[in-house]
Image 1 (tube, rainbow, N blue to C red):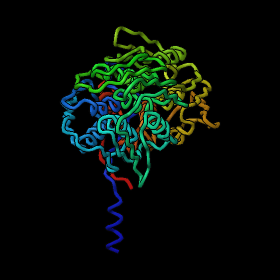
Image 2: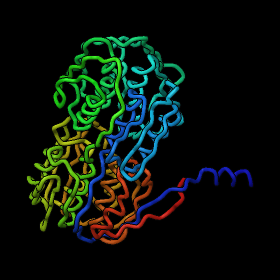
Image 3: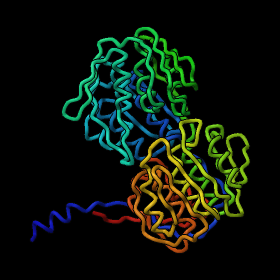
Image 4: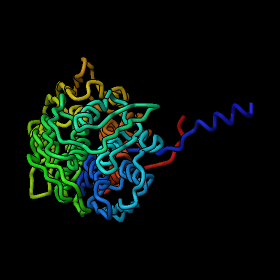
Length: 434
C-alpha cells in the first residue's frame, strides 16, 4: 500500500493554472514581445559564427530558455538580460543535440543545419513538441541530402555527415518554414551556389536570412519563394534585432475586439499582419495603424466571417484557434478551415465546455455564434489552443480555470500580466495534476 501511494505521488506534476473572471472590457496599451518563431531560428544560427552574438528584442519565454539550454549543452554560453540575449558560441565543441533537450520542442531540429555546416557532422535527436498533427522532418533531410550530406536515422537520432557541403538546386514539395530555415543555414556555407524554390516567405524566414547576411552570407531573393545562396567560407558574430511577434499581436487584437475593448498594441510590424487585419476589418472591427502601433476598437458584435488558413502572406494557422474564439461572439454562422494542419482543432471540445456551439466537418469548424459563454474548467492541449481558451474565458460569464498553461508559457511572455494591465482579472496559481 505504501509503495502504491509513493507511485501515485510520483505521478503528480506541479503545474500552473490561470483563473479568469470574465466580463471585463480590455483597454489601454500593451507592448508586443519579440517573435518566438523567429527567435527559435535566429538562436541556432549563431552556431555558424563562433564568438559573441547578441539578439535583441528576445522574448523571455519557455521555448527560448529551452533552445538556449540546448546550445549550452553543446558548449555555448547564453545570458538573457531583459530582452537582450547574448550567446557566445566560440566554445561549442559538440555536434550532438541530445534527446533530453530536443524532446521538449520541435524547433530544436533547427540546430541540425548550423551544426552540419560548422562541423561537417551533426547528430540530433528526432524532435518532440505540439501534438496537433504530423509535421515530418523529411523535407529537412531531403534538403541536406541534396547538399551532399549522408543521412542515417538510428536509435531515435538523425546523423548527418558531409565533409564539405556542395551547393545544389532544391525544390520544397511543400512550403515549409522549418525546412527552409534549416536548409538555408547549411547552404550559406556550402561550396558554390544553392537555389531554394518554393521556399517559405514568412517574416521569420526573412528575419533569419537578414541576420545571416549581416553575418556575411550572400543571399538573394529574400522575402520571395526563391532564395539564391552563394556559399562563403566564414561568418562572423553579429548583433541583430528580432522582429515583433505577429501571433502574439493577433491574439491581443482579437481579445480586444472580443471584449468590445479599446486597445493600443505597441512594437508591432503591421505589414506582417495584413491578412489578419483584413479579416478583422471584414468582421467590422475598427483598426487604425500609426507606425508600429495598432489601435483596435470595437463596440458591437463582429459580423460572421469565414476564414481559411494559408501559407504566408495568407491567414496564419497559428491564429486559427483565436479566430474560432472570436467568431463565437458573432451573431451568425462562420466556417473556419485549416489547410495547413487538418487536425489542429483540439481546442474545440474545450470551447464547447464554455458553452460554444461548434460543429466539425473534416478540417473545418462551423461556429454558431451569438450564444453566451459561461465559466468552466478547461484544459490546454497546445500553445495556440491555450490562447483561444484564455481569450474565450475573458468573455464568459463567471469564473474559468485554464489548466496546463505551461503550453501558453512556451510562446507568450507574462501573458497574465499583460492582460492584467489592460483590465483583465487573471490570477496564476500553482496546482497539481496527474
